[in-house]
Length: 157
Image (cartoon, rainbow, N blue to C red; front, top):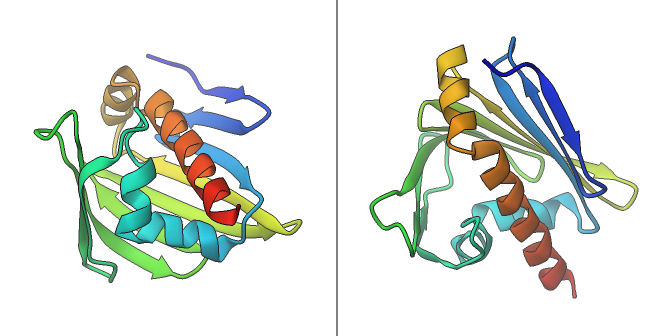
């Protein structure tokens, strides 16, 4: 069993809270919350950054409404789509979805002319959190967030 942990780099902080069954990541952007929200919710954007490998998605479908779904299919792993259902949408600062039995919450706060993004993944149990950590979800999500930062930076250029 893994203990609570926190890892930080100049670009990102990741915290694992065993009691709350959460993996939380924080990132800063030079762009506005509206631009970051668009990058999370528009298929033409998501397909360019979602895959941790950096490759564009083979398929990206988004039905952006409460109860609407999404499907992100990596080009290299067409048999492993990431699918979920939107639970809360409050543009441009909050996006909540249920995916693979976990609840994902993205919060975008306007900070110092940019955005502080918090991504919190809440698992249903210790076993669920352990499974996610063994699969490398924390590392893969960190890479995906690196891709998101690069994508948003390109949009702002």
